[in-house]
Image 1 (cartoon, rainbow, N blue to C red):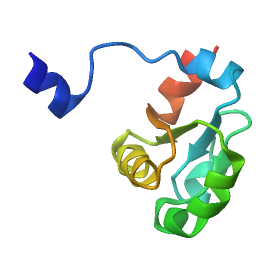
Image 2: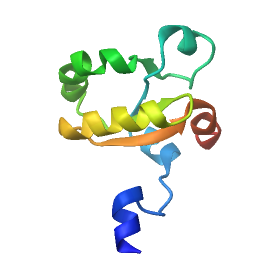
Image 3: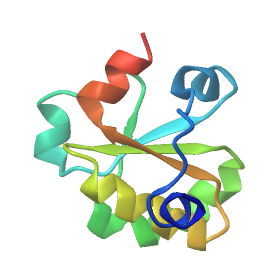
Length: 103
């Protein structure tokens, strides 16, 4: 089971609502058009192709980041990219499910 956890992540459920209450920032990595069609309240839009250019600014905020997108694939890539830069980040998955978890 340890190998599966290390490959696919822990089975422990992340409390996104608590992270947000503690000051986390939600970063939606979908395109601007997708974001305009609906998004998590108070989230910021940084499309995935532009994320690397924004890492220094995000790092200066010294906040935990919750990434989201349409399905969770792009937000997973964003989480990895942020983590490699030394930023604590969580993959919130699809924005609709994240929004529901934050209620």
